[in-house]
Image: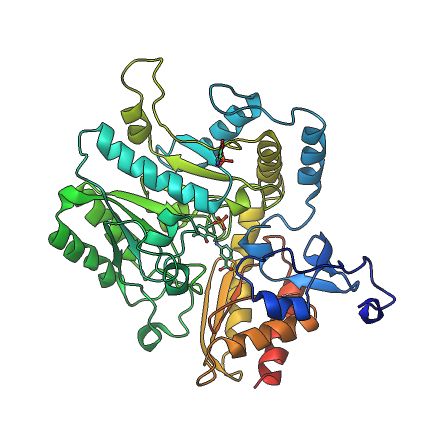
Length: 447
Ligand code: PXG
Ligand code: PLP
């Protein structure tokens, strides 16, 4: 294997690639021809061969500050040499409280309370459990049903895959949570292909919630959970008016509305959160990823005041919510999150993303007419390029584009035959040009 490593190689290839069972990866294919990163800075990764690769996906939609953001590096280094760990049950450390207060101040309305987790999947499970328990403690214990959406992605816990709507993430794992129903997805190329920003068609699909309520009765439904835009399923944007409609129907029937902002949170749309961008206030928000800019695993769930207050009853010495993680509000994660928030604020990254969005939109839509392209979508600093699948070989074409881009120095993400782009918020016009031209060449090169 040594022979395969060029002179520019910056690190030796691991001797054994077998032991690591890679997540969401074609393990055998990968291990025959591994793609390994050994360093990263700003907009670029460095591969084990010493090549630079432009990061068109902010890692996995998380490195919003760009790689090795100086404040985050320093904060983690300092924290590692200080308080390494503090139990989050019946104990605390100051930074956790400061961080929660700081986040609550960033959120609109009375989303005033924060529960810390270690990932988006944990945030989703936490939110669903809080929703169920809220109805329980307010005397509405019959409200046990959870409503998700087709094509939704809410992580990989049993709660998340139950309300989620991605077939491959569900079909191998038994009967999942009971009492779950799903709204229809809003993906429709016939009506919405090549929309710039939010599509015009499809707000009426939110009315399907009325049908679900009529079937099960509102008194059995605890919560509706949706991503403000569906990320993992390939950037499916909410039709104009759709989220507002969901909010109205939930209000009418006393159903909690949960926005899963694991991807949309922390600047992706050029606003701090999608709730702010769309002007729709949910009852609970789940986040992770951009909270620490991906540097340390961390998630956070935001709940409105009336939900938190409903639990703060009964004897003061009683635990109010029987839920939590060993690493909730881990000191290292709190330090990274504070530094990420400093970076967003001091460098004006959300405003930057908003200012860059029109250039981004034009760049994405400049791919219209290129081979295989059947749709282009964009919002904030998110983009998607949907390809015509090769008959009988779904996903192959998109994966070939991914490989071609990687070989030519750009990292993109694929889901099905859709290419997804979600760059760090520090992206410059020259990076956008390079990313789009690399994709254009790849589209022309693949079968
Ligand atoms: N909710 C949403 C909306 C997500 O996008 C999760 C929950 C789960 O987060 P964790 O931290 O448990 O992975 C996510 C994660 C992709 C991709 O490229 C998307 C995610 C993760 C990895 C890859 O489609 N989203
Ligand atoms: N499994 C066992 C045996 C444990 O003792 C614990 C936590 O104490 C867990 C799982 C949960 O781990 P975490 O709190 O890191 O999610």
